[in-house]
Structures are given as structure tokens and as C-alpha cells.
Length: 161
Image 1 (tube, helix red, strand yellow):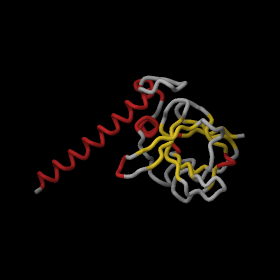
Image 2 (cartoon, helix red, strand yellow):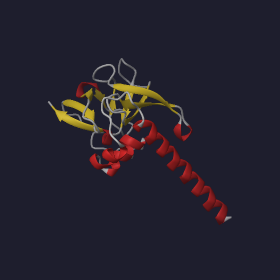
Image 3 (tube, rainbow, N blue to C red):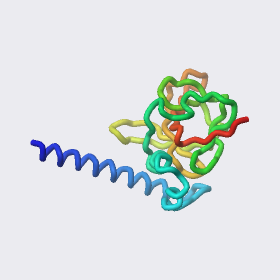
């Protein structure tokens, strides 16, 4: 029985690793991004945690990110390329464990794509400038836009006003 369990776990890990590899390849093969770097260059520039989130679509643990309960005035930028994505005026406490915003700084800064990973159907959000994974957007926001851009802190940098 233990050997069947071990084989099952190896299969799950193998599938997860393959999914991450395919996601990384999809991100790096996009030719329409302003910022284009090899995965080797991204690995040099980003911390291992940032690389996992921004380039392999990982998710940081809820309530662990430095920008979750951060409400200073300024601009939130892509942690990979520095592109401005959100303003502090669009940030709110989403009570979800990740920084939440109700709109992007300017239309076209964020790309949305269907994400069917982990047995769910969600809308993934990517930086339109470099293709890096930011998080997901949901239509359950409490503001007039009705949107909640749920973003990993590791996907962001911040410039104070």
C-alpha cells in the first residue's frame, strides 16, 4: 500500500513540475512584451521566491506579504520590470490575505488570461510589459468597479509619493 501511495505522490509532483515548466515556457516565449529576457537572466535578477511567483505562477502564503496591509500613498509597480500597475488610491483591504486593488493604474497595463490550474477556472493577471504573473482578478470587489485584483506582494515593488 505504501508503494502505491509513493507512486501517486511522485506522479502528482511530476505533473506539478511539468505544469510549472510549461507556464515558464509560455511566459518566456511571448514575443509581444516590451521587456524580454531569458529565464536565465530573470533568475539572476529575481530572488528565488520572486522568480517562483513572477515567472512560474506560484502563490505566496496568504497574510505573509509585505504589501497586504500596506496603505502608504504611492504607486505599486511590477516586481520584475518596474512598470507602474496600481495606485494606492485603488488599494483596499480585501480580507483575503493578499494586496487587493479595484483597478489598474491605466487601462492596458495588465493582461488577463484564463487559468484552469488546480481544478479551478480563474482569471490570471500578468504584467503587460514583461508577461510576469501577478495574481488573479475576481468580480467580488466591494467598490464601484466590482473587481478585486488579488496580487502577490512578491510580484510588486512600491514607490512612495
